[in-house]
Structures are given as C-alpha cells and as structure tokens.
Image 1 (cartoon, helix red, strand yellow):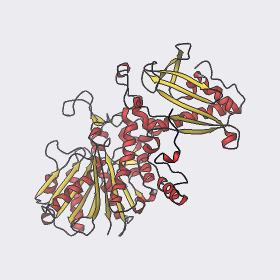
Image 2 (spheres, chains in turn purple, yellow):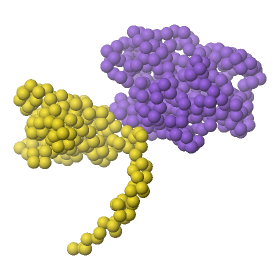
Image 3 (cartoon, helix red, strand yellow):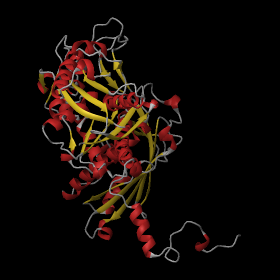
Image 4 (cartoon, one colour):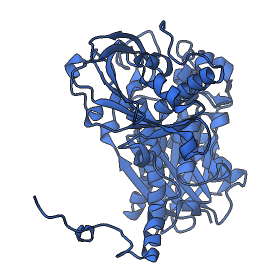
Length: 329
Length: 211
C-alpha cells in the first residue's frame, strides 16, 4: 500500500498587487534578496482561508466526481497566519464543503514544507488504517493580512510574500504513488525567524501591524543553511530509489527568492526549464508555494504522465527541511 | 637522531609503485564531482585569486602599504598607527563601531603580503589574510600579475575569544564566514580595478594620503 496524490487544485485571490504598491523601491531594486517579482496576490480584508479552501475542495471533488460527505476521511490544514487564534480552520472547511470526517488536524509549523509534512501525516494515518482518503489544505495568508497594511507596505520585505491556496486529494492506493519522502529538523535554528511587533508581544494591544524578522546578523548562515539543506533532501529522496538528481524530470521547491532557486537547480544539475516556479507572478507563497506550482504545472500540461517529480524545500530560517518524489502516472 | 624511513613504509600514500595507473584513474574519477557544495569548497579555507593587468612590483608596493587598505577594502577606514612596529587601529564599518587592529607583514623577495588583523583588540592578531603575488608572465604567459588570497577558518571565527570587548549587539565576524568568498571576491575586484586604473594611466600607485 502506498499513498497517492490523486489531484490538486489551486485557488488564488483575485486581488493583484503590483510592485508600485510597496515602499523602499530603491532598496528593493538594489537588494537582490527583495527583488525578482512582478506581482503577487493579496487577500482582501475579512477574507478567510476556510473560504478559499472550501471553493478549491469543492472544485476538486466535482472534478473527481466524489462526494465530500463520503469520500474524505481526514482533513489536514496549514495556514501561515490563521483565520482564528484558537480553533484552526479544518472544522470550518469541513462544514463549508459538507464533509463529515473522522479526523481533522490543523498543523501550524513547518511553513514552506508543510505540504510534505502533511503528506507524511496522511500517509501515517493510512498505514495505521485509520483513514483511506484525505484532503490537504495549504494557505499562505500573511501577504494581505500583514503586508497589505498601510504601516507595513512601506518595508522592502513587504513585496516578497504573496497569498495563495491549494487543496490536494490523497488516497491509500498505488494510483500515483509518493515513492520516497525525507524529513529533517534543525531545532538550533528555530528562533532565527520571528514576528516583530516591537516591544509588544503579538497578543498585546499595540498600534502597529508588525512584520516578520529574520535575524539579519545570521543572513550569511541562513543562506548557507538553505543552500545545503534543500539539495541534501533532493539527493536523499533520489538515493532511496537508486536515482541520480539528473533523473528527475521536474523539481518544485519553495520559492523564497531567485538566488535560492538558482542555487538549488545548480546543485542538483537541473535546468531552469526543469525547475518549476511561480515566483514572478505569485512571489513567495510560503507553504502554498509547492502545491500551487504543482497544481498549475499539471493544469498547463508541463508535468505529463511518466514524469518523475521532486518536491523539496526548507522552512523559515531552516528549522525544517523535506523532500518527496512522485511518479506522475 | 632517529633513522629516516623510506616513504613506502608510510601508510596511505598513492605512488606509482603500489597504485597502478588504472587504479589511480578510478581514484581520480571518484574524487572528481560535477558540482561541489559551497561549504566543501569554502568551509575550512577560503582561497580566491585574480589576474591583474599591472606589473608585480607595483602590485606589491601598493598591497604592502597599510594605507592602501582604506582604498580597496569594503569597510576598513579611519586608520591611526599605534606603534613603531606597524600596528594600526582602524574602524571596520561593516560592524557598527568596530575597531579593527592590523599589521602588514610583507616580504618583497617572496612577493607575499599578509594582513594580520583582529576585531576589538590588538594583542592577538588571529585573522590572517595571506596574499602571494606572481608574475603573470610565468603562469599565464602574459604581462601583469596573479594574486592568490587565502584565508583559513581559525576556531575564533566560530567563537569570539574576547566577548567582553565586543560592542553590545554587534554580530561576530565569524557569523559571516559563509559570505567570505563573496565579500573577498568583491574586494579583490576593487583591488584589481584600482591597480589597473592607475597603471594604465601611468599614475602614482601609492594610496592617497587623505581618505
């Protein structure tokens, strides 16, 4: 028995934000860490991740001719900046699509590689024979919610995040198997990316929106970590199958900036055409990046039956990394 | 004094007497990769090099002058000489309010110019930048110079030996080791451009006295 990725649907906010929305244009132009995007999507005020998931899940179930009430045993979600602080949105999604699953898990960590971690959770439930099918819902919501605000859009970093959503349907079957998965955690790096809300904690009353801060003193080390961790994961999943990285037909990684994308394909000896991304139009989609690019690449028929597809990435300042290989049948 | 032993008694050597050329071919193919991870190439040592279209004597003269560092380094400025043996103190503007202490140790016969430096104190100059200047005529068959610039990752890069002397909140120089290849490449390009500019126009080579 294997876990199969049956289908995947992306759902993007219709609000397109161009580069001129953001401040510090000069810094963005001169600093390559903050450049390379033409536009990105932003959630509007009041919009919910659960709504986007609901629409994507309904489209997916209709396309597969499945009944949400019967054909989903498990709902898994990851939302970068959640709709609600306490409750998670998995149960809300279930309500909106008319599902009645045995299990719902809202997972908050593993950022840009959350799709892979949630695939592993689904696989584990399936191996334990607790479920036969699952939807995996990935959302990046921090762009509109944080960087669409008046006081934060002036920052150079504000142009980099973009919002996006994807829902994948997986089953316990050999239909389109995930052949190899690898994971690693690096707790020593766990505090190098944090929310910055000045001298107030994020739950305390304050006048500013806040932003996301990487430890700038550790920029060199964070770049080095990402350069090493992601090719390492790609090599590991290939070695598990006695493959070389050059046997991969398509690679999809998280998309923090153009430098990382270049370095990862150089390290794995893949061409630019083989390394798929949506960075120019959607910017950094965090955990939604890998599934959104995968969904688009299937729809536009870039990925075709027979292709060996590798998914890989790292999260935050490199506290988690992961890789997976899927034979597209 | 102990008796010398023949090298064939030293384990682990690959010499033609014991490793034939077919076996050697396999060893070399195994060592040769298509790509090398950054930290494998620049993790312990950071060697860079450049061709400079300027005669080796002029390159040596310029590099051996401590004041030249104000011109071609990215961030070393505001020098003052502290002692007759050539110890200087300056500001390294890459770290806010950071003092950098340094000495130039040069040998004209060997055409080497080494910079012995340290942040925050001048008693132990452990950040050592090793430079060798070679006539390009010898190695590339054309006029000019080749400069080899080497750094070794001293354990102090991993851990500041004098944390009490560091300005509060200032990142440690060793946190940037992974950017040394990039930073030094930019600075070596500065050196090349300055030397080629002055040599091509037959200008005085020495650094300007004013900053």
